Image (cartoon, rainbow, N blue to C red; front, side, top):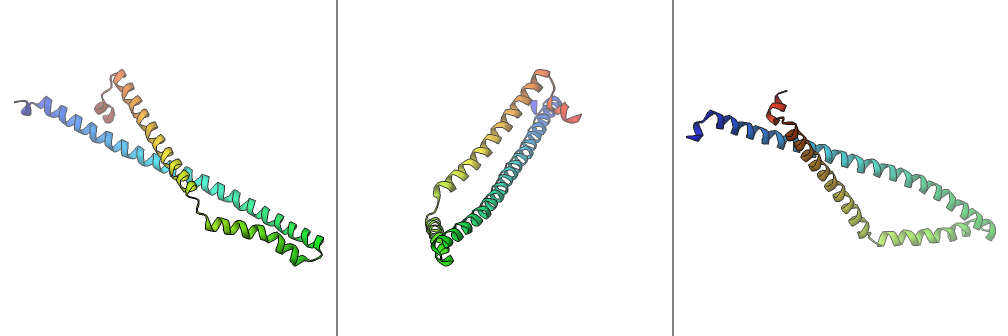
Amino acid sequence: MAGNDPHTDSGLKSILRDVRLYVEKRLELFTITISEQVASILAESIHRIAGFLILGAGLMIFWFAIGYLLGELLESVWLGFLISSIPLILFGLLFVNLRPKWLTRKIQSDMVEQILNSIDEVDDAARNGRRERQQSGVNPAEEQKT
């Protein structure tokens, strides 16, 4: 009667406890990894947005300077600003009407790639940790007790 053997029952309980512990640790590690990736993506996005805002402010001042320059050359300020605004209006219409599907796909693929790479790194670290414990002869159940 192997089911009543106390060594088998304690071994089975130990294995179940180890599996539960392993799954919990994997979920915690996965949550931390995803949080790090999201934080990294947000920090990168905020940094880029700030850069674009500064660049936009510089371009706006530059465009005003071009408008004034053309106004001085044509001896009509409103005509200088009208001429300098035409390229902005054309580019604005172009950006509004064209939907950048390639950009959306690129961002999505980059995010998926980062998450998959981090999951692979977690898997490798877990395998290396298990291998090191097995080589050192430490039982995971005993390691949990200490």
